Amino acid sequence: MQLQGELQSKGLQPHHYRGPLHGVGVIVKHEGLRGIYRGLGCAYVYQILLNGCRLGFYDPLRKGISALFLKDENAQNLAVNMFCGAFSGVMGAAAGSPFFLVKTRLQSYSPFRPVGTQHQYRNAWDGLSQIYRGEGIRGLYRGVGAAMIRTGFGSSVQLPTYFFAKRRLIRHAGMEEGPALHLASSTVSGFVVCCFMHPPDTIMSRLYNQNGNLYKGVFDCLGKTIRTEGFLAIYKGFLPHLARILPHTILTLSLAEQTNKLMRKFEGRVLPMMAKA
Image (cartoon, rainbow, N blue to C red; front, side):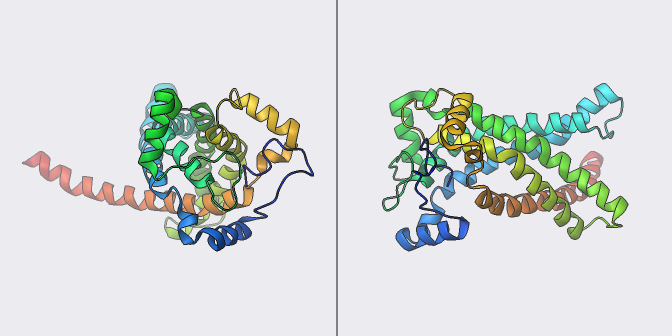
């Protein structure tokens, strides 16, 4: 949906996919269930790299900066939280960008309803190999600037919004620590993330999928898209994105909470025993 009607004036744009449900129906009808799972392997690798950095570096970075500037590592400061969320997200985006590049191209390819530039890769490894042979390392990191902006935007609000919503729900709604609180807080966070992250996500998809140098960079792509298709073009595919990011955020943050609890229990039991030994 982000690629259909690319750089075509209003009224001339095709609408192969009219919404998330219609889009899924069209893909399954013509390409089978495998069609809606194109690029899944790349998506797994990308998420491991992205969220490994985002969730792994966020809290240590926040505590370090809070201790340095606020003299209290447990102090909560919105600016510090947003900076740490953005910085950890940018690191994750840079680490996983080549896999997101191939994932985007694998997902964009369709033998029945081609939309945007078509790249025919047999699988993720073939895609990485073809790009490296044709364009070198630079080709693998095409669009990395847009990916870093996209993830920086999303990460700068995801974790701070999650913890902000969590504190407010405890204070004003009387909720207690547990799955219900984690679900509510992560739902709020997911919606806010989608609103902030979708415009750079659209730009990133187009930069990743371009053939040659249709766009010179992030701002060139943004300008061409808005001038040709109108401002709302940068919000194409918002509902499918929201349908993806909400369960993704809920599962990621809720499972992260449970994992942290297990790790704290593990550290509390095992580390003292190791120290004694």
